[in-house]
Image 1 (cartoon, rainbow, N blue to C red):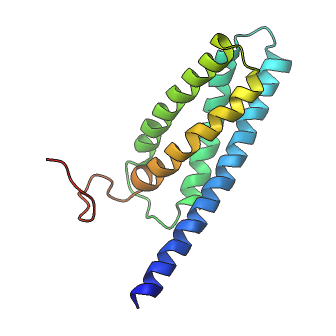
Image 2: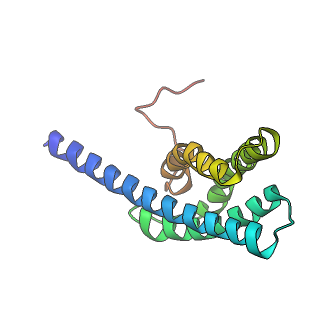
Length: 150
């Protein structure tokens, strides 16, 4: 009986992770497309880091909507998920923007390569944070199976 419950839990988490990966991949496509249009067509002379932030905001709206409606739909919607999403994405965005600035403007790597590298680095953080905090019905409760610091 316990084995069945464990297997079902692993299966659910695997499906959640696969949905997260699909949404993340499509969000990356939205960001990359927006960035490419901004930097190569619409605002060619603009600062690349500003164009990156604009593209990031566009992809964040897309990302939240799909995660709420599809990836984490099995978790009941509770008030506070939007502000928690903004907090998590704010931290991830600061990391993304900082890494992009360092990679492109300081280290002089090709901007589209930096865009891909940033996405790969941020993905693990955002999956864990969204699963355990953003879309969790009670992210602040103490968990009995986790060591709690005093």
